[in-house]
Each structure stands twice: as C-alpha cells, then as structure tokens.
Image (cartoon, rainbow, N blue to C red; front, side):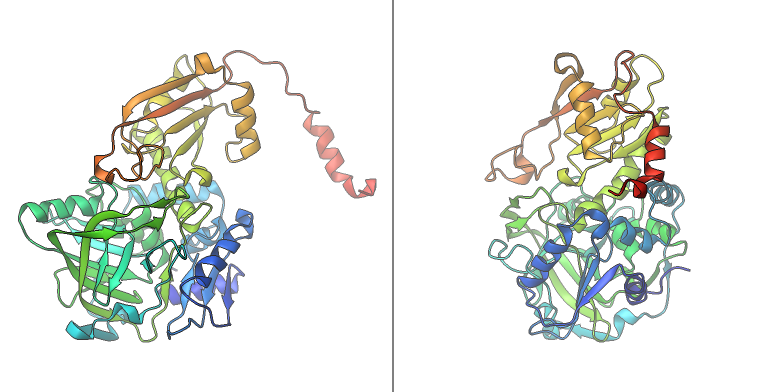
Length: 471
C-alpha cells in the first residue's frame, strides 16, 4: 500500500532504523546543514535521514535526507528492495506507464490558510545551507507546479528558491530548456504573469519524479502516481488555477511577473562550488496553506556526496538505460552509472557486452543525446568491469585505454551550465558558450592475457575457512 502522506513515511523510515531524530535545539542557519554534511561524509550505506525536532525560533520540525540519504532510504520510499536492478526496473515501468493524478474535494494541506498580509514565509524554519557563503535561507525541496498556457500540460520541477522576504522568493532556472522556464517564456510572450504553486513536504515519490528528467509532454505527477502504484490526490488552489498535492505539509500559491528580475545567489551547487549570483525571476506569494504544525522538508545539496546527487543519480541512470535500450534499441547494455563525484551528471559510465565492430562507438556517440546539456565525460567498459566500483573504473582506464586511439573530443556541444570550467563565473548562465565532451572507449580491443588473480574456487575456499586462519 502506498504511504498516506509524508508523516506516515517518516514513521516507517524511523522504524526501519533509516532515520534518526535530533532532540536538542539546533540553529537552522548553520547546524542543520553541518550535521547533514557530517552524515553524508560517511560511506553511502551508512547514511540516514535526519529529523530535527526543535529549531531555534520556530515551532516546526525540519527533516532532511528523507528521499535519498541512501539507496536503502530511496528504496523504502518506493516500497521495494534496494537492489539496483529493482530500482531501475521500477523507474522504467513508471516512465512507460504513468498514472494520472485525481482531483479530490479536500486535503490536509488546507488545515490553515493565510492570505494577503497574513502571508509570512519567515514563519517556517527554512535553513541556510552554506553558512557565511549563501546570502540567506533557501527552499531546496520546492515542488513547483506550473502549466503550459497553450496545451495545459502540467510540469512539476525542483527549482531552488532564495527567501527574499515574507512574501517573495527568487527562483533558479539554469536552462531555458527547463520545463517551467519554457512555460514562463510563453507567458512572457503574452505579457501575462505565470501562476505557480509550490508544494513542500510531500509523498517522497513526488520529489523523485520532480527531480527526474522526463519529456515536456509528460506530467511528473503521473509518473509519481506510477511509482506509488496509485493516483496522486490533488486539490484546487485558493487563489490560482492550479492543483496541488492534497497531503502536502505546506503550499505556496503565487505568480511570476514577466520582465521582473532580481539578483539571486550565490548558492552552494551540486558541482561542489558556489554558483551565482544571477539575475533571475521572482515568485510573489499570494496565499499560504498548510497543515497544523507542518513538517518542513528539505533536500541537502552542495558538495557531493549529498542527497541531491543521489536523488539525481537514480532516475537519470534509468533514463539513460531506457534511452539506449528501449528507444535506440542498442543491444548489449548491462549497466549505466553516474558517479556522485560528478554530481551524478558530469560523468557517465556504461558497462556493455560488445557484439559487433563499432558497437562501443555507437554507444559513446548516442548515450548523451537524450538531454543536450548532459555528461561531459562518457566511458564505455567491458562486461567484466564493475562500473559502480571506483577501483575497477580506474583499473579499466589504466589498462584498456590507449589515449591516442581511444579518447575522442566531441566539440560544440551544450555545456553543463553550472560547470565552473565552462566559463568564468561572471558570464550569465544563458550566455555561456558551447562546450565539448570526452568519449572514452575503455573496452578491450583484442584478447588480453588472463587476469592476474587466483581462480575464484580458491578464493571462495579461503572465504569459507577464514576464521580458521586466526586472522
């Protein structure tokens, strides 16, 4: 059965030992981020979600890491086992068989309603994530809902929001091809404000879907419905013509004005560097509705590893796999991996079984084409290389690549716009030049001699007898 709401899910995480709660009072402007950073510096399997019950100066608790602290947490949100195959399979089915959201008559997100002068975003414990470097608090898990004014197709995306006052925030769209930015461009062309709603504290599958790269004509809430196996319940907004998740902890209703921009940033980015400042649109809040005593949900970002790097990694790996195997019908693909060190975006590894001449080159030249500004390092390896093991990846690069023959530069491609190597920081995001990609064939080009390891039967015997050796 799908989770009723975020609170039921948090109870399950806590019961499974995948979430820990801090009882003492903490400061949202530095302690929340630094405690989360300490947790994420551990090995991936040791990370866990965090709950902060007492926030200095606020009445609401803060939770972080609740979607992607680890693969175990991520799998718990999907109600499956944490195996890579199971997670990718779940995503493939959801992307192929979305379940449309349904309108319901009421929801807990409307237990408290504030309009006009009552609106006060500062009442909520929004953390500062890079202390002394960020200009202030940022909403990092905002599921922003917009609609195309022509087709009516809905988009749900995560676009970080700098708190700029009681009733306004900045918004980061780092690509004009991002779906909310496409919607806004159409409103700007009509000289009309764009209605937008932001849901915070949602069923974890909604955040997962909002973070995924899905086609423009696909509703992320329908993908979220498929991930949970049941339609997402929606209620109508109070002041704008949009629908929002009925079980959300907090809803912001407002609009974005054409031609209005203000300095946003800097902010600690998934690249591991500070990004910005930029001149970006403003979100004006007209109404806030929320549950009584709302739980404030946040995503941990900045230097990887972080929650955002894992949240990006899992669906994007499924997207690349689907692109290669199901859309392009390329055989022999075994696994794809986006290491967290590259923000789960810059480096793409592909494990494959070569089946014909030019097979590796076919994969290298097409793997990045599902999204223009994606992966600047693309490496293919043989089936015997575990691409999720950093040592094995470096071993393959060391001994299966002859740089003169096996490394190719693909020029004049879209850059990862937050990539600090693509342009100096004073170049506006949307004016950055074309970049390039590195394609590396790390497969064997002929039959190698045997790998210098004992046969597995001997190692298995040693494993069985290990305690007998007294070591």
